[in-house]
Structures are given as C-alpha cells and as structure tokens.
Image (cartoon, rainbow, N blue to C red; front, side, top):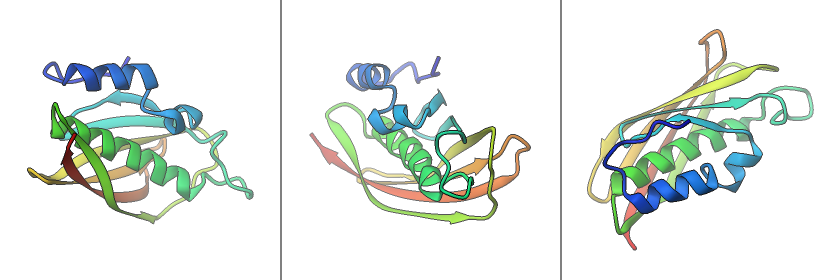
Amino acid sequence: MTKLPDDLDPELRARIADTQGGELSRKMGIDFVELSASHSVARMPVEGNRQVVGLLHGGAHVVLGESLGSISAAIHAGPGRYAVGIEINASHSRSVTDGWVVATCEALTLGRTLTTHEIVVRDEQERRLSTIRITNMLRDA
C-alpha cells in the first residue's frame, strides 16, 4: 500500500489509486512505496525490464525516475494544477541483472512554476546504479 500525504488533493489521490501510477508504470511492475512532494520511494523488478544482453535497461531507470519525479511534482502542484516534464537526464554508474531496484526521489527545488527532483536508483545491496534529474513545469488546469 502506497503511503500518501494526508492533505493530498482527492482527485490526484483517486488517479494514483485507480491507475497505480499510470499504464507504463504498471507494465514495468513499479511499486510505489511512499509519495510526497519532497520525498518519494518506489521499487521495480529487474526481470521483465532487461535489455538484450540481460542488464536492466537504461530506459527502465529513466521511466522509474520520471514516474517518481512527475508524481512528486503533481503532488506539489496541488488542486487545479498539473505537472509537465520539461527536462530529464540520467547518469548510469552500475548495472544489475536480477532482483529489485529501489528509487528514492528528493526535491531539489519546489517552486511556484518549476520543480526539480533528483532520483537515485540502487540495487538490493544499496549500491548506486543511476542518478536521474527531472524538471517539471507546473501549469493551471
């Protein structure tokens, strides 16, 4: 069960619950553990998300990071607003072939019109696999 902030916009709460974070997140097996504007955590299986030589696909790292960063930005945006990703980058520093990865998302800036989050993906031994940074623009609905 995902831990959500008590004051979360009811519409966003329902969307997160109904979609489990969105179609792609579901397909990739992403499990959201904790979600807030400033700190979020999710995990994802390596199996089913590997590239042709058996390593966790670099794009899977980015999907995990963008999923966390975008939901965190949407939580910060609040009722009547939404988040749109405008920039994302990733640095991969280590590979993994099995098990689960855990991503921790921390807010770097939470502004009125922009948010930036850093997401660190680690393996089950807590070794850093990748670092992702995403910037979202906040818009009125």
